[in-house]
Length: 144
Ligand SMILES: [Zn+2]
Figure 1 (tube, rainbow, N blue to C red):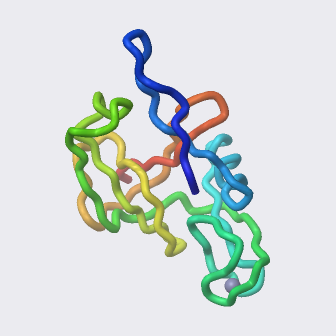
Figure 2 (figure 1 turned 60 degrees about the vertical axis):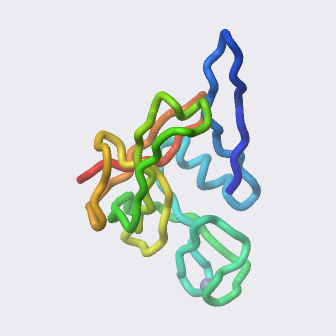
C-alpha cells in the first residue's frame, strides 16, 4: 500500500495528512473501508489470509484470491507513542499512539487506538472507521 500527500502547508491553509493511494492489489480493501467494512484478501487455493494485499500467496504461491469480511476484532501486538517533531499535518495530534493490531484472522494491521493515550500489549480492540475525506475512510481501533 502506498500513500500520497493530498495537501500542503501554507500560511492560510492547514497541512493535510496523507491519504491512501490504492493500487490494483489494495483497491478492494480501500473501497470496502470507504463503506465502513473491513475486508481481507484470502487465498482462493489454500485459504491463507494476506495483508497487506498482494498478488501472490506467501504460503502456496497461488495468484488467485478472494475478498472476505474480516472479524474487525483483534489485539494490540505492539505500539509506540509519537511525539514531536512530526510532519505538520500530525503536529496537533501529538502525542498519539500507532499500534500494530493482530486480527483474529492472524494478519496484522497498523492503525491508531483511538480515545486513549497509549494501549497495552494484548489489549482487545475492534475496528472503527475514521472518515478523512470524501470517499476515504481509514480503519482505526478502539478498546473493546
Ligand atoms: Zn495460498
